[in-house]
Length: 399
Ligand SMILES: Nc1ncnc2c1ncn2[C@@H]1O[C@H](COP(=O)(O)OP(=O)(O)OP(=O)(O)O)[C@@H](O)[C@H]1O
Ligand SMILES: [Mg+2]
Image (tube, rainbow, N blue to C red; front, side, top):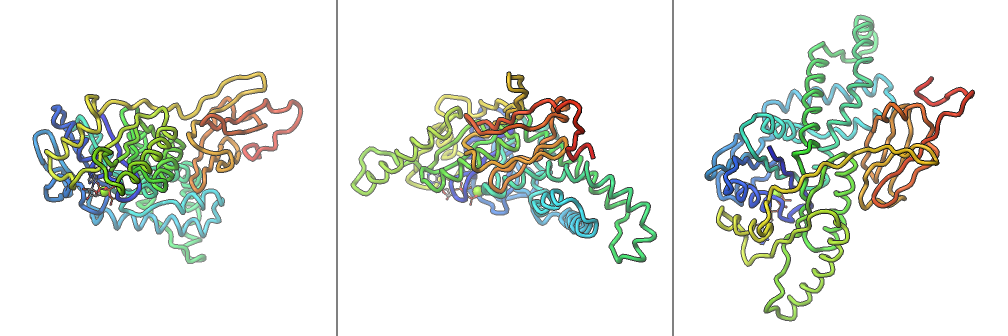
């Protein structure tokens, strides 16, 4: 089983390249499902087939699916989300948890995630190609299982006990809407499912492909995406620069574009050193239909296997140095100034711009003090020292 996620800024060619890659995979005899988490039907348009919310055969070995956001589960998720926000408000939940909850996206994205997981676990496919929504949304979507997981393991058990004990009192006194057990059960089920979503999406068989065009604004966003995706433990295996102008036979106007694009391509090569960097020519017309897409895939992947790649990134490593233990977290392209670090008990909260990940420290480090941190060579390095002997440990976890 191989899973490829295509992401990138709006309009750069995600759907087209996802469809092209799926066509190539199917043509090589692998049972391939290409699935869109986007409300627009561009995947079906690119393949020139009708959009359906169930996998529908489009060619030999090739199935297409557009996850339907108006699905019947939407309402039940809205209930859960509404409840979580009420609880948050009433229970005076820890501000970190409160902030985490604000990143919970809408039902649409959750549904899309659950569908990706269901198809991945179905055993029906050799290859799953996912055409993701534009960058920012995808990133939020990928952060969700962990954000909710934090809530589930830290807040919910307590909440559930408290609610059980106080229910008769609270319902009368506080005017707080008290959930029945079914809400908790639904949340716990959802959490287990989302945990599995994360397991699927960060597993060794899954990789993310960044799609971009050779323009500075698009490249800047792709660079950020590379950092954030790695922060969340996703393995990026390639960057595909789409809509590259061919340089032969160019007039004055196009020569200027070719030159501008060449500079952006050089920057892209620097930015994504270590990733497979592929290019895709700006074609004279929209690549629509299987033949066009196969042709496009051939030009993008040359003779190499479109499914190759997929080395999982080691999310955290700890090594022993003369100065103490050093924890490293890969954060490609991140600048020191963009990264924030907060230690909270046995957790490390790493923020890069507006994205935040809660990392549970390996047990060997839980009692150590943070004595320094820096960003070097695409890595966040955090130095820890033994807790000083004979002093009381005043870290939050101990109190
Ligand atoms: N290499 C190319 N040459 C010519 N046209 C292209 C190429 N790649 C994509 N297109 C066209 O550009 C348009 C946008 O492509 P596509 O829908 O794949 O982008 P997208 O990133 O999925 O967009 P969205 O963010 O809206 O989902 C489409 O009309 C597509 O046919
Ligand atoms: Mg699209």
